[in-house]
Image (cartoon, rainbow, N blue to C red; front, side):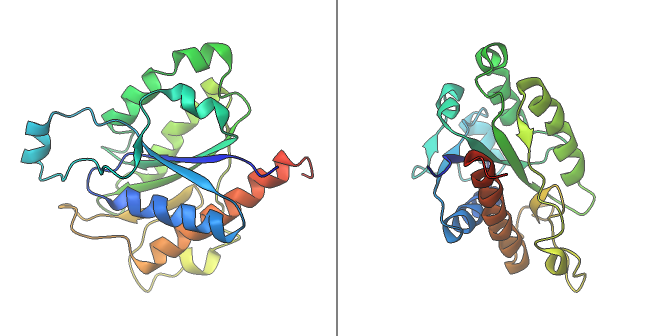
Length: 207
């Protein structure tokens, strides 16, 4: 049986959503399927308006109950970095997973990461490192992207781009105006495909 994969993200301005869709496309190219979820917004509309944020899209299910993820084998988690760490929206979500922490609801499940920052050195790696503590407490098995499957693209310095061995990534610019580039989308698609292959290998017992 094919593994059941959830792609869960928070995206204030749409950058992480675009990477999430690319990850999903990669999984599908590799022969799998994935469900997209967004975690709930925690900021009031008044604040979002002042930040020129469009608000959450209505065409993607809002994951209000972490229990939903217990039925999945693996997760790809999309995190827009805030000051080199999780944004508050992700913090609130994880703070609701006490039941899974205690019961082992996420224990042994596999997870990968994709990220965004405003600038180079803005915290993609530090945010990934911060996620390791959360994964460890839940017993979630981290699946790094590595370099092997996209070395040429990730090592290409002919243009600025996000993404690395921790996972796909994008750079948004300080005002959020920069959208994911073709290179960044390609890296995300490749990660999605390779993540699916890795999870499927372990799910089938062939690893």
